[in-house]
Image (cartoon, rainbow, N blue to C red):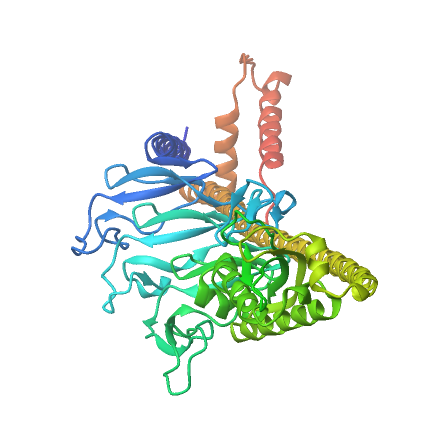
Length: 567
């Protein structure tokens, strides 16, 4: 074997050794990476990294920035990561999920005393799975110089974050934030939300005339009460604008919402002698009159904030305005009528009109809507509180008016029945309008849910596009790798052939001619199994045979040598 052949064989053996060592090294790196450095984060969790080396954090910081030692602020989502355990410590924490609720399970009862169910923040009875909001509390960073406990997310201050987390799944670092899940504000049809700002400048109370105080004599100062006015933007207190029916994701530390029923409500004061709330007053003739009264009252949405700001709740309106004013007006106005006036139709109708107008005037100044005040029952008792029979009353009235009074009474009862029928019809209309608003609310909720699904699908499509782009780049790199390996292989083959050709040219130069090189090649490849020598004298056939062999050998060398290049 020639020197060049040995050189090429040694070169190939070296290449194989280098490739074997490279494959072994790559295998060891893969085994170490997947066995020691790999960190797997399953779905539903995120990864919190803790750096064991780096610059120290300041005293007020809880989480570290990149390059600092300690708990890193950024969290990593589900996936596979490679970290050096000497430099990093890891911890898996669950993702924070804010529930979206189920609108089909929501239930409201508009009359507060009907069912013993769960009461909401505004007193309304509610049931069902409602959406949630996430309240973030930042545990790191400096305190707000203004001293406010509620800060914005971008401020970097420690405290309760003004912005909330809406329904969804979030990667929250538990070392930086505490998350509190609270129900969102859901306002049903027939209700409004009265908003109270919890932050801002505190307003002072102002004095206003007390419309509920008894009338005063001329020259006396009018009675006043101190109330807190509605808040303006940036102030703490009740805001003038209310929330219409819908779903609102509000921070209860910033805005407190009282869900208030609007529309008309019915209140009836029944005549009962043992009841201390019974409307009882003396007539002009000295007889005691007891009345049963039905009042239809309510709140308009544009005045709901003012009423709640002054009284705190709709129940307080009934206890502090309707009931006491109803008794006061009946006593003041009723004492000007004779006992028989409450039996006669015209006078009784007149008293009912006076009662309704006076009560409407007081309620209007308190931003309360009053539809009517209807006298349902009348009881008359003697001065000694003994019941006076119908015969005794007739003795007070001329017998000639008995038939007329009965007829008038029947007519008034019919009109009363008509008014009750109108009231029932109005209630039905209110129920129909309420159902229409509820249907519209359900439609809006479904629209919001559909928009959320569309946005989620759009985000998923963008993620798939990003993955496809990365896979395309990987494929391009693989093609480039194959091209480089093929080019390297072709270069090696070219160098090998060039080396063989150079070796042959060197042999031709060393032997002196191409014919000598051909004889050398023939001799090197000539390997007969046996050689037979025949000797004979001169002039014989066997002597001439030697020349024939030389000629044959020359012919074979000529055929095996490459043709000379054309000149």
